[in-house]
Length: 397
Image 1 (cartoon, rainbow, N blue to C red):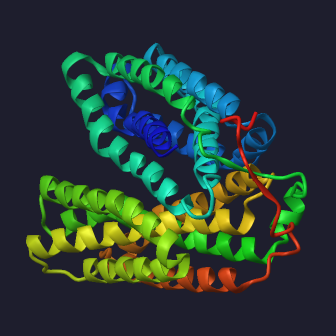
Image 2: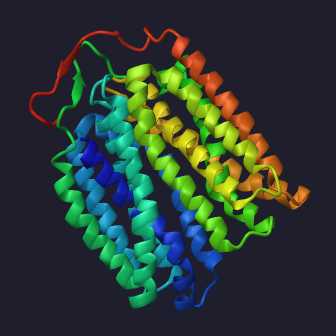
């Protein structure tokens, strides 16, 4: 399951996040602005969050393999569709109509499958799977950009389509191994009841906070460093070290949370994130300090994501885990959207990104408070706490 989850999220992040990197070449060919094409990506992001609960319900009812198969097919179709597009409106149509279900289905189904590896291995499985996102961003995206420069953006997208099909379909058959399924004693959870759950509300608020301080790094760190006088290459290097720490934090943080507890590792991860964010708000730092800070911040954020996902599984693992996971996508998306706008607004008004990172420290503090309260909250009104069975067929379908 760990290998399959890693590969699927690596392909998904690499394929989807390649699009913004190729928009300059696409805009030049279409004779339009990059902003016009980037708008398709923004609309797609909102659509993915909107259909999260529907994707989750499909996972609950159809199982992992069927859902993932649909996801891989639509991902390949999205890449091919954009590659053959002849106008910006066609890019919009392909991303929204095909790319939305591709991303939502693959992401939710993979996270649910990793979550259901059992409480003793849940953090480790989610951490390894989540590390695939970082590898996709640091390996596949640069590779696609290189292909685009050498052979054109259409060839790059078609190559990604072939890679997604060649690795994605074989990975599906590894996903459900070791999965633990809820027994018949567990009852399905309605959407309304989920939103009325005190632990879910706390985790949701915490998820918004994670979106805020995570995206403060990935949306504003590079422009912040460039505003301080660093070159684009130096700023990109710092962000790359952040991603390296993020990958390591996912794996190490998730595994340690299985042994030492979600709260212990979650608190340590939040402290690392907060320290890193606070240091980034200071001007006049040397490059070596920035690189060390980037690694610490990335380590903390990566471990935070792993603990968040594992805790959500601990609290809500049942026949409606897909619905829970899909609905929870709204939290991070909301935080990311707020940070994208608010960070730029603060810079325009104060001519500094320093306050953005200080506000992100406050978000990290609120997240850890929400985690503490959610772990302490009783959750027996959702479904019984006992009655599990191990999946013997290797699939949940």
